[in-house]
Amino acid sequence: SAVISQKPSRDICQRGTSLTIQCQVDSQVTMMFWYRQQPGQSLTLIATANQGSEATYESGFVIDKFPISRPNLTFSTLTVSNMSPEDSSIYLCSVEEVRGGDTQYFGPGTRLTVL
Amino acid sequence: GQQVMQIPQYQHVQEGEDFTTYCNSSTTLSNIQWYKQRPGGHPVFLIQLVKSGEVKKQKRLTFQFGEAKKNSSLHITATQTTDVGTYFCAGEVTGGGNKLTFGTGTQLKVEL
Image (cartoon, rainbow over all chains, first blue to last red; front, side, top):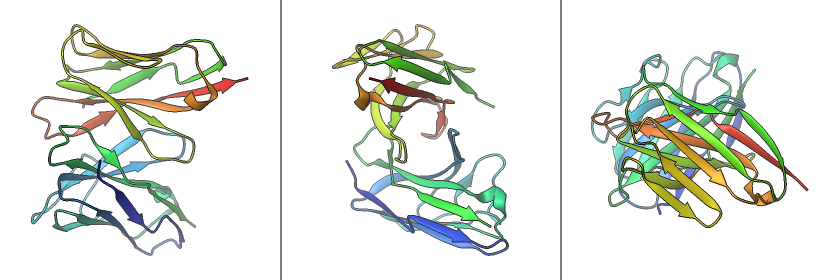
């Protein structure tokens, strides 16, 4: 399966600032997704990162708050904008491989704390 | 919107006991997947079920997909301490663009 890395692995940020999280895959993938997992909770899909076009956001998530880029088939970024303590969470990217069927493989996650 | 619930939320067992988690979707699914997340880790894919009534086994783990493709279960026989973690089911709806809706999860603790 694809090897996925995320940067940073964790960060502590001040209210009102923005953080960009990077997701890098070692092979070309068809689909890339961004999830949020709040402490002790399940995973919630933020958006699907589409290569070469605007991301597709789920209900409750907007582009102004979570801008996403996907310039190629191996890389994506998620920005958490104008952060508040409620944004403290783990942010995970996941991928579907070209020949991997519908299964998703997750990156190690970025643990974000907003003060 | 689509909801996927799991029960129980938590389960404590003695090593060697069996464990089962149940997953129920509010809508019919095209397939269901199971993931395991160790404490401090990220979700790791375990298996995918596609056919109505399908049963798959992985060593001590048995996965089942319901006839109506709206529910699923994971059964672990003779639990070991290495089974500790949170088990999530994740459902995909036909025409949903490969998106997964994750269940609420079952946290398993195994005591010696």
